[in-house]
Image 1: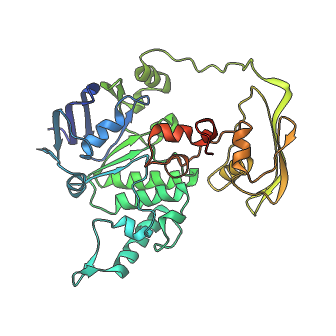
Image 2: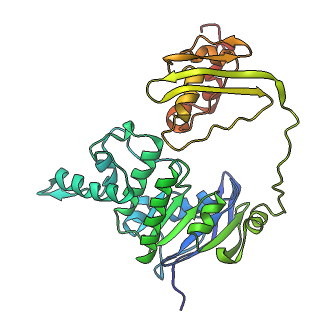
Image 3: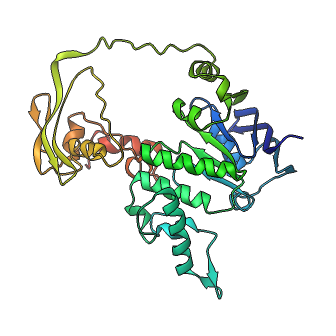
Length: 365
């Protein structure tokens, strides 16, 4: 008898007549980290949303603990031990951390919410993952990395059987990642089945046991990570051999500086920042969470007002503190938090695309 805690077989799903999953499968053992790997659009998120009852499958079977299940709502899936941490946060920004952790699973006393117990219990899970803020802090006041940690605390606070981590380390530091892996290993020892989705290959080999590969909505194969390597996994993902040799960028003009930051200061976060971006160049800005990368970007685009320093575009010093000016001059910023800062979710795609250039589409602006 196998020790699979979860079996998904023959799963198919279409959207508006387009087949996005075709006979997909996923089998997870109790006490293992099972990596789900595939390119963007391979169907990983759709498969997970079917497991969590966010989407309804058209064909196939799901077995949990040896029993066929057909969850009608996400709440029913959660109550049966399915916990998913999505790339997009599912938090209420207008209430506190502890209220988010126990949302839908509140502590009650004499028919009323037991706030004191909820705060005390939430603090235990926050300490466990190293989230060092007050449980009463509003989620809207947290950084992207801290919101991710709240999601993790929320997931492990329930009696979880299957924990799905969808790109969980994308917004947290190496230290926080190490702590997350400790938590994952602890959950493994308790028999929890963990589905881990990430494009960071080094992580997969560090934390994963087996790996299922998907391509174009279909299941390809499952391999033991100790018996494979990055090249083989990449080939299985894309269906061909991929070359990782570094190619010289022929478009760089070292004599032409298009953007320069000189002696830039911002509050106590940025001190004497200097950089030069040359024509045709891709310039990386690296650092752990809290190092000031986002603040630097927002100073460059004029979203934050610098206390000292200059931003020079094609030899012209920008006025600063003016997003309109930077857009007009061709500087574009893609926020790390697309949902809250990059898009107006209640407006259609056309409005969002036109938003930075409204003057081109009407005479009233």
